[in-house]
Length: 303
Image (cartoon, rainbow, N blue to C red; front, top):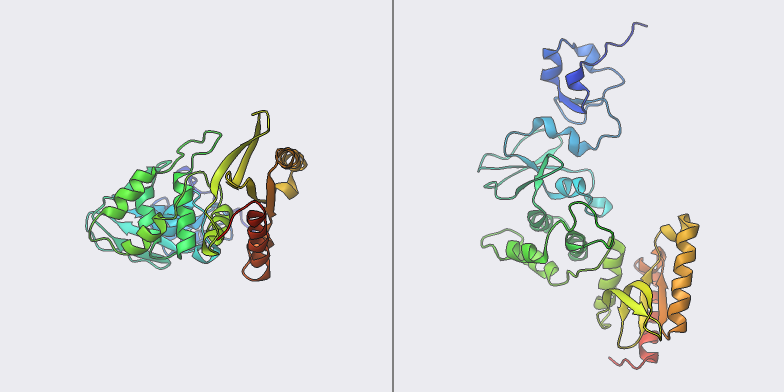
């Protein structure tokens, strides 16, 4: 078997256009080689881990951007699985929406353009409005929670947006899907660190229970800090904690959390711990909400 023709250096960065490859002397057989993928018509990539969103970059014109779920995935916005795998590209400057196999095209005046690591995407506040056309209320709230979240350990680019930016975007006249965006914005809160925590908080609200405070810091009887908890009711000294996968995969994290829960109990707090099953529609979610309601009532809460 003849040796595979190596790719020219300018084509080694990730995705490239077939036209550019042919200009470097590569023929049809080389472009159909088993080491290359064709994520889109007219595009090739040799990196099998490259996100499909990045593979579309060579097709973008000046002012075009990755938008909607595609732009959101670039900056790690949590999305439901049903929203994955769709490539959205928005043309700026009033140009016609891009048309290409595998691409959902949009067009606007270019006001929403931003850059993340050199990649053109919709600015975060614009993403929030765009996603209102795709996501349901709770998932859109999770997007808003993520965009405004400020991690306790500083991360570059965080927060992606201030709540004021989301408010301003929702007040712009003539926007499509603005009603859904405004409704979700009303439930966006700071201090929520994960999509699961958002869904837990909203399940509590939908059940008619009082709204908990996200990211509540708890102290012992001497005023010494015990730690931060996902959700809590300081008035009734009840905590709600979502146990994510880190408790199963990290023994160190598990031990730290166990100690935190023990100290909170000693300080007079009740803790409702919720696993993934406890958020699933049906008996799991019902059990979670029932346990929480009983805890609140035992501490003096009445509907």
